[in-house]
Amino acid sequence: MRFSKLFIPTFKEAPKDVVLKSHEYLIRGGFIQQIGSGIYNFLPLGKRVLDKIKNIVKEEMDNAGANEVALGFVTPASLWQKSGRFERYGKELLRFNDRKDNAFVLGPTHEEVITELVKANVKSYKQLPLHLYQINLKFRDEIRPRFGLMRAREFIMKDGYSFHASFEDLKREFDVMEQTYSRIFTRLGLDFRAVFADSGAIGGSGSKEFMVLANSGEDTLCVCDSCSYGANLEAATRVKIISQTEAPQAEFAKFHTPNIKSIEALAEFFKITPFWTLKAVVKKALFDEGKSALVYFFLRGSDNLNETKALNVVLGANELVDASEDEIKEAGLIPGFIGPFALRNLTNSPYIYFDSELKDEKNLICGANELDYHFVGVDLGAFEGLEYKDLVEVQAGDLCPVCGESKGGKLYFTKGIEAGHIFQLGTKYSSAMEATFLDENGKAQPFIMGCYGIGISRLLSAIIEQHHDEKGMIWTQATTPFCVDIMVSNIKDSAQLEMGEKIYAALNAKGIECLLDDRIERYGVKIADFELIGFPFGIVVGKGLENGEIELVYRKDLKKESLKVADFTQLIMQLKEIVSTCH
Image (cartoon, helix red, strand yellow):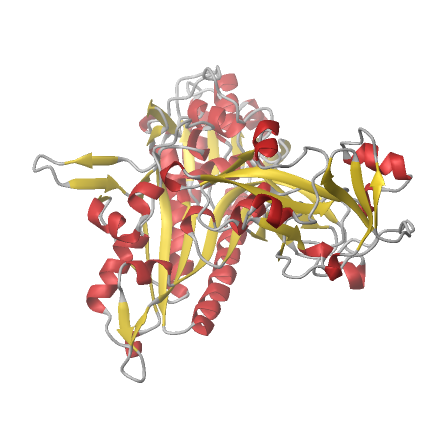
């Protein structure tokens, strides 16, 4: 391809209101063009990258035994109403009526459509397992689209759905997809982690996210410094903390603690560490139809509540917000002195939870539900019917739950960009939509489902966030639009132009994707565009040709190397060997 014939509108200046480098460089490099809030056109270079990503994903999915389909972008609202998500999904679901007043949605995801498809065509366990996937357009009406392709309203996604007769077979496919996704992101040249994650609005019992490691990532990841363990903050766990300080020994008693309302003040008052105190965190849960209730979470004073974990334990709640002091007082409690003793009788609340690490713990100090009093010598093992849940937010330096006890692996935080997510859905959608098959005994059973997504268009941004410098993009070798940019320094110099054409023809004949920059532009413009656009290799045919040399530029570190052109056959062999990593 010749630069003069290819539509590549490049720009020197960064667009306004751009935060991420990927957003800036993809626009400046002529890969994408914004036409609306969170809506982008893909120009020729961007389309080439998209196609390369799609081809890798398709190849690996096909090899894993999945079947490609193409589902409708517009979905009847009745399917979403049947699953219960039409109202619950929120305003991000774009709803509209056609001229006949039939209700539709623009699909942000296709669980309902695929379940209806399989329901109509799969009747027996003999037809299972089945895995269908598509690479298609999606729309999510983000309230604040930003960061370019990273959080767009219209986007391209690979979404796959598997159907099984047993949970054991679902787990098998889940593991196959974890391996398949790992191969995809490895082939794309990305540094990534597969991390345990919260299932969120999709639902299901277990999920993993594939996170591209980048300082600009929106998600905080908790990873081990010794093994491959990784998790989103809301799903991270740790080895149970054991205090290195001596426990405060005391018989159970009520103790006068005047004006001691905080964990810090309580620890100072008793000359102990916060580890031995019991912290009460009171939230207000918001439910459908405007209903709400106070929820009580207990954890060690040295720990913090993870709000996503907390929300997940309150069944049916849509959101947790801080409870005000007035709301706490209306419940008959005193802020700063809340404890578990008689709490259910005082509040009549069904929502009282204790962090799992507190199970049967002793020698604790907690509020006495009375102004200026705390209990000492508290033994939670003496309580009956306490509900223990994983509530704690893991902290940097905690021991890894996989290798911490044996190898001493410690957890640390980093940032990541979500590029893929796999779910074990179970029967959430099949039960709601009455999608069943006949098992070996002839009984109707709901399909057991899995769901597997990759953000195809956002991968352009993720790759650049991980691979760029102050001059521009640095494409990975599997995703670069072209492998080599051949720059003729002075297009009016017949010798330079002839050599550029000759190299271009020879490399193309070897199957190497080349772009010949034959524009009537200064050399400075051409090298600046090469650095911005980020092809792995550049060949400069310039004044050095008078001495029988051309210059090879490595985009990764901008290192330059002079090559002799006297033996042209040898030159092409040498170039082919160097740039063959693109193929």
